[in-house]
Image 1 (cartoon, rainbow, N blue to C red):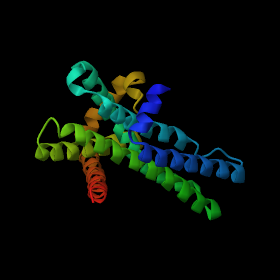
Image 2 (cartoon, one colour):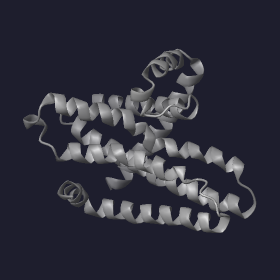
Image 3 (cartoon, rainbow, N blue to C red):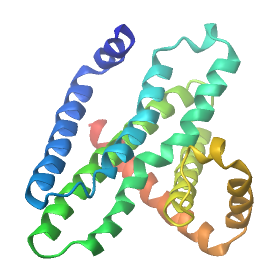
Length: 216
């Protein structure tokens, strides 16, 4: 509990806004369930949880004294962060589920999925900001920029793996062999590379917009 409170107060204003918006998102799903008598779209709660993971990790990483912590611990945290950061941006692809909605429910579902996508994307951008601050203490601004674009493209690749190949972060443990084979095939596919770069550009420009707005 003390750990959670420490992270919460580390950036209280932002975390308070995220908490309130999360409550709003959960309320939307409950309203939909009441209207339709269905729990369809409740998978968004799990997707939102996965989106919070990299944000929590990067927030924790920021609180560490990198000089006085074991490198193994830091590299482990960084690896886990890299594996989970695509989940933050992935939720935007859940808009494909609007194909199953019609009439009044279509517009409600549009608001619900867009709301979850917005908070997920926001968490991803905040997490990238945390990483950038840490990165700029290690390497030059120029190389930090290149690294962030590469990570954005890796997020695009992660979205491809999740949405098109239908894998998730847990398959690294539960289904590693098939995942590795399909990752190798995808890494040599023009379609997957195009998909990854386009999403990477989208994510990176969103990050730049957020960065320039908050710096004013």
